[in-house]
Length: 255
Length: 314
Image 1 (tube, each protein chain N blue to C red):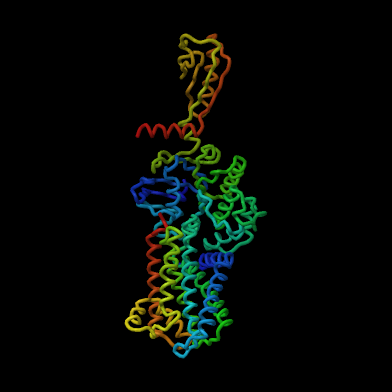
Image 2: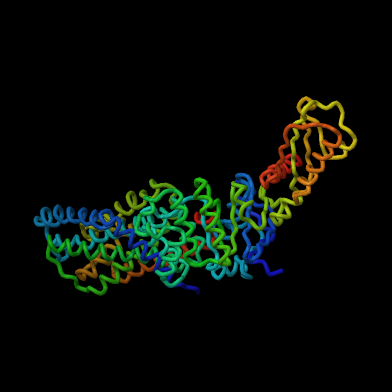
């Protein structure tokens, strides 16, 4: 398969430059929102809560809150990254260049994933100001964050190609991802839910992601880590297949 | 004759909804030429460019560029093709220099600041290199698009309405830029509404209407073949009947029989010579005239006449 690293790097660099140009929206805004969560749920309410699975409540919610921001921001960033060129017509340059699906994904998704990692590092740094925590498996945590960021960047890319209005662009992150993350065990352990809600909660795929990240942080999880990793990898693969099909058919890209 | 740099055969594009934008188009473009594609709005000019540049999926037909079949070997071909779109579509918040550097990288070229400087200087954009594109005038924005299209040194350049909305001075400046590109060996295909533009620059002209190529020819040959001369001679007094020596010319009387109108010639200057002979014949016949106005048909006259004929035939 052809792959031109210079083309991929050009896209990556431009996307990163765009993020730094809009640093407030891309980085400061989610950091501020997450800080508020830590102040309210971590410090104020968390101080009165019992530890969950042996983890102090303030620390317990860190992986979930990180996941909440990571999913929302990565999806939005990637979707916006491809939607804007489609919307303004600047996509002509990408379509007329000797660039295939591999370079496009490496550029757009690589940048969205990088932004996700930077964001995760900033959020973890911010969390440290409010609560004490130790990461049990730092390498696994870094790998998992990267995996989730890449998967949802791919998902956002599909969203950005599917959407034909700003409204549609915001629908999925706002109306699906955020509620599912809230209900996916961000603030509680699914195992603590009464039956049948514990089983119902596992129908929410985001619960597996939150659980997986929480395992890498504290060694405790609602579902086995292998299941979380497998599901995330499966989602990533499905997104790659869909994007390859989009490029092959030119759906919503080429008239 | 050298192999065409671009060869299009049976190219057809039918959009969803049934609109047939291109209908079995055949076209060959020669290396190093400036080819002007003329046609009214909705004729299929932009669709044709889009099909070659990868923006439009053809319904049928083949496109071969530099000997590569675009459907199969699109990477090699596209790396050598540049496109300046009709719309001013670019990231308006980007600076001029970075926007051009992005294009250079996107087409797989090594970052070459010296080449970017050359391009920006040649388009009088170097002083604006650090300006955001949104802060530039419309004409300068269009030059930025040209600079972006040149960043990977294309051998075949498409200019879709390059001077649309550009003032007269800048348009002439743009013509010079395009002529300079041709000098460097770049093959140029341009679409334009300004037929004067095609007349000024093109080596060959193609006329497209309703998705079909109606005519392709050397500009000079087209003007010679279809061109005519029109002369209006104001007679000192109305004329009752044309003497046979005058009636032998392609003339008719008009406006109260006080004007003699000549329509003839072949676009090679023959018309003007014949008008001179007509003037001498009038003098010999003792027919006085007060003024003589000669007009050779332009490419625009030919274009309008041709499209009118086609519309009538349809």
